[in-house]
Length: 133
Image 1 (cartoon, rainbow, N blue to C red):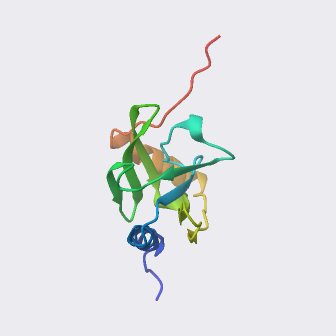
Image 2: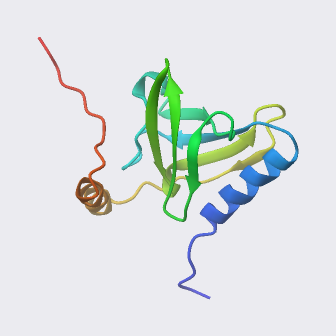
């Protein structure tokens, strides 16, 4: 049965729904340095960021086969979050830690460059820093 798509996005959606159905708060962990990830860098720790994805905490949550996207407030500022499915390391319940962890396979450099090109074409901008002296 080769050629099947990844089951990861389906598992993320299922675990998210299961956590909500059980009255808990769903959190997601992204690898922040994965190509295409757009998160506030001030909240990244050890290369990861853990975010509350409860429907009451975010707007426009979308978990597609390609990415997890939503808008959230950080310091009162609305911020668009983009996490390619490959960047998701875990989905778990805040209250008891139950959920699922995932392997994160970083794409080859050529694939990462292609993803960046696709992102630029779509108009999405990856955050960047500039050294000011």
